[in-house]
Image (cartoon, rainbow, N blue to C red; front, side, top):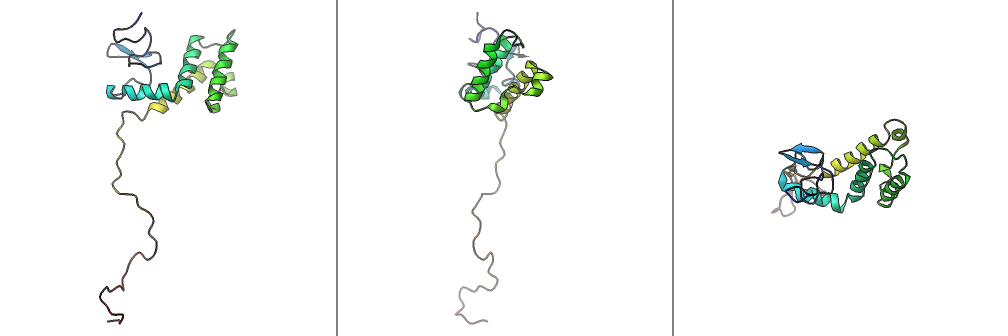
Amino acid sequence: MSEPNGSAWGMCSAFGCPLLGTVGSESRWYCFCHVNKPSTFNDAITRELREKQLHIVDSTLDIRRVGGSFYGEDSTYRTIQQRLISADRRDLLMSQAEKQAGGVRAWLLRLERALIDATAGFGEQKPIALTTPTAPVIGPTHAANFHPYADGAEA
């Protein structure tokens, strides 16, 4: 079963997005990365998610698939750990504080925040520098006593 735009049911309405549609907008469901962004940046956001952040995307989908609890799903937890370690993102592993306080839900929020931060710059105008960066000046910075046509005698 699929939506009219070709995406699978329950998935983000942005074409090709691998995340679940969680926020309703304009009678469609978008993921937290695509919502409230100009549609002209949908492809760039999707490309970022698929090419550079897929290890986090797959981890969030796995956590949602087990319903926020790894009780009886140790293999899923280990798979997520291995995926994040192999992507050199040990900073995104479940912390001791998350294990004690919020559990899997707090971890999921942190992973989703990492995706939001990775795609936050899309759709925003970058400031253009008003000055041209140059190399540092070597030598004197002014020539108060310089006379190009003097013959060496002080006037």
